[in-house]
Image (cartoon, rainbow, N blue to C red; front, side):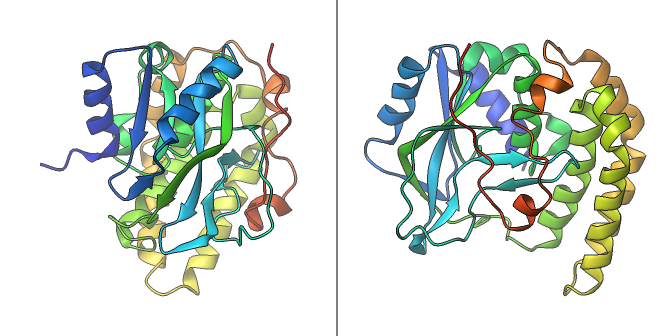
Length: 267
């Protein structure tokens, strides 16, 4: 039975020993020192809860698959520099919103304390949701520039499959409503609604996208009563003002899959 990415990883984490857990997708191929470099970040930057990898496309090593996950105030998440040329780019360790869970390191205690991945998501956007909840308890993420993996990127489910479009659409709505502080819902709620209308409009002109997009929006809205109950159980130690340091406000960055990282500033 396919129980999904979220359930499978939660099950595995509970069986793990040690203080840190490393996740690596079956379609991600790590460099020989990948894990060593991730663990190095936990020593260099005490107190962090997440570490991300520099991901290159497995079929084109001169293009990035991603340099961390970023989150716009409208609720749009993206992988920085996805499908962009890496030639001439000099990377350094930076703070990002969260790691792509295809190749990431999490503090086990923090992971379990906030409930791990939300199993209702099944897969897609579950790492963004987890990173948001980590952020709400004050957890930060370092993108380790020299922890390298080569990722097929949606090599299992298919990048533009109905499955991917549906789950990505539905889970994007759930993450925004569940995790965004109430002040953020009031300030940016209209932007999120407009974002979903924009995706619906855009899907009309994309082959076979309209049905899974509409179904994702419908099920996303229909599931909000349960998501709202989940919202009440989320630990919140960080307010919107603090979150805005890592949330992206510029509307151009997500459209260009830009780098939303910031200089590392640990408490």
